[in-house]
Image (cartoon, rainbow, N blue to C red; front, side, top):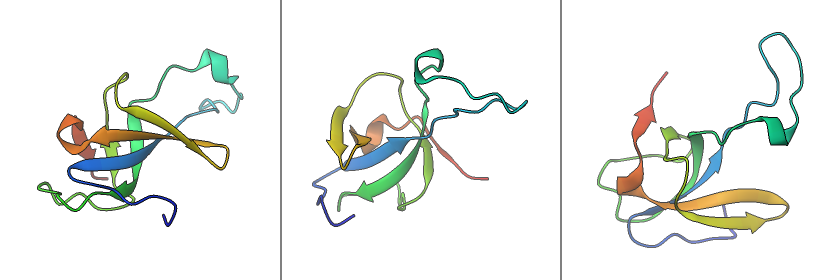
Length: 88
């Protein structure tokens, strides 16, 4: 993303939200819990775990720094705080 340049061991992620159930019902935002799955949008130069842009990662429910740009919400989080990298 050209609107932000990452520093050190940080990553910009966007939570993956499930707004539709398996049965096809749409849930309001207030009924969904905070997702622990996120997609990496940008990554800093000090990346010891070789995490790539668009990787799916598991993050803590709370923490990081909230950032809003263009009506979308992002989370700035330290790379060591990632709980897992999801590879499917």
